[in-house]
Amino acid sequence: MTFGFASSSAASLSTSTSAASASRLLEPAEWAAAGIPLLRNPREVVSGLHARHHPKPLTAIVAVLDPDERLRASASFTRRPVPADGWMFRNALLAQLRRVIPHDLRRRTPVRTAVLLYCREGEGRWTEEDGAWMWGLRDACTLHGLRCGAYITLTHEGWQVLGEGRGGRRPNAHSAPEPFAMSEAPPLVPRTGGPVSEVLRRAAAR
Image 1 (cartoon, rainbow, N blue to C red):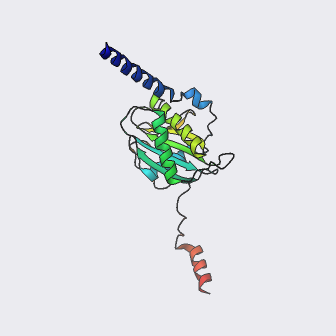
Image 2 (image 1 turned 90 degrees about the vertical axis):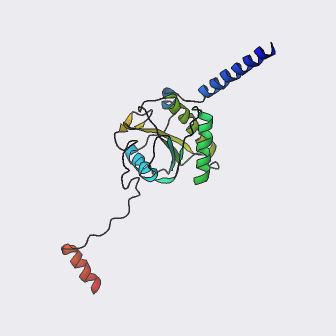
């Protein structure tokens, strides 16, 4: 009887743990209803993070953008091969945010926005793993004083901003990174030669 009771308790604990994990995810409809701010130029954001971090499948990139959508901080890490759980994802994201940027908890209204790019195998459509990442991102933003921004998947098909229906074929999970993006391109180097350059050279020599 004791053995049977122990087995029953273990099964009950396993069931309750699974139920708790299942509750720590957001369905697409819940995410869409949360008022997540739209990115003005999602392709630029995706290309910039892709160029900076060179993500491979199972890589998560959390980035903090200022009100003008300029990148202020970012960090990437590899997802461990454990069952998807929003609470664990929240803790991982929060640890990365605390490492790269101070919190904004003293502000009455969040000014900076955190976005999450997750590179994975499979198709770009929503999965329960994506729902757990969404839950984790929203909770991590609350605890760090940030606005919760877009959740983006990067697969072999391309990139997809879930809940918005916007996406593209490049970059994708297997493409080479583009050289510059996210308003971080270096200033243009003046070209030499030609009549304009000659006039400037003479003016500088006077």
